[in-house]
Amino acid sequence: MLVLLANFDYFSVNKVVQCVQKLYDKFKSVCNSDDIVFTKIEKKHGTSFSNIYYDTFWFVNNLYDYFSDSIDIFNQNNLLPQNIVIVDDFFGSGDTFIKFMKSLISKNSSIKSKSIFFVVQQGTFIGAKNIEEFAIESNLTINIVALKLTKKAFEQNNVYNRLFQKYEIVLPSLIIRNMTSRWGSCQIKRNTITLNSRLIETPRECIEYVIVHEFTHFLYPNHSRKFYDLLAVFMPDWKERKNTMEGFIFQRI
Image 1 (cartoon, rainbow, N blue to C red):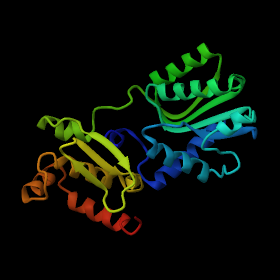
Image 2 (cartoon, rainbow, N blue to C red; image 1 turned 120 degrees about the vertical axis):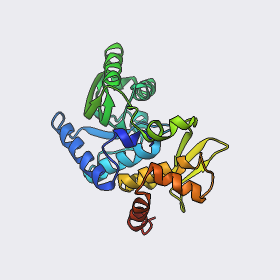
Image 3 (cartoon, rainbow, N blue to C red; image 1 turned 120 degrees about the horizontal axis):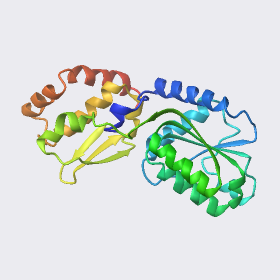
C-alpha cells in the first residue's frame, strides 16, 4: 500500500466502483458473448485488494450468473465456457498471471482452445510484453484489457522515499489483514507495519495519515510530544486527516 498511494487510481469505494464500471465497459467493447466465466487469480500473497477489486467488479456490473472464485469446478467437469475472463487490479512483471495460466493448463489442456481475457485496472508495458510472449510460446489466445499501462510497476515518489529513507530506516515488511480495532500498527523489532485491509474504503488522505503515523514510530516508538512534533513536520495537517478518518470510518468498522 505504501507505493499504491503514489501510483494507483482507486483508493475509495466510490473510485473503485467507477473504475470497475469503466473497465467492464472497455471489456464489453471487445467481447460481448454470454459463453463466459469471470474469475480471479488464486494468490498466496497480496489478495486483500485483489479480492476487493474482483468482488466489486462482478457485483457492480451484475455478473452474478457469470462469476466463479475458482474455475476448478469447470475444469473437473469439462464445462469450461469459450471465454475465460481473469479479473485483477494490477500486474507488474506478469509472472503471477503466467504461473496461474500454467497451473490451469496443467489441469486441463483444453484451455488452449479457449479465448483468455486478462481484464485489469493497471499493468506495465513489460508485463504485457511478457504475457504476450508467453501466449505465443504456449499457443494461447490471450487478450489484455487494461485501463492503464505504465513503464514501471512503481515510481519512487512514495512515503518511504520522500520522508523516511534519509533516516536510514530499513524498508519494513508490510502485512495487510482485517483488524477490528486499529487502522495500523508498527512492530519495530520485527521491522513490520501492519495495515487494516479496510483502509481502501477510506479517502486517500486517511491512508496517507496512517502510513506516515506508523512510519514515524520507527523514529519514536511511542506517542510522546517528540513523536507528534515530528509527525507534524512530516504531515502538518495530520490532525485534520485524523478527524476525517474518525468521522468517515469509525462508524462503519
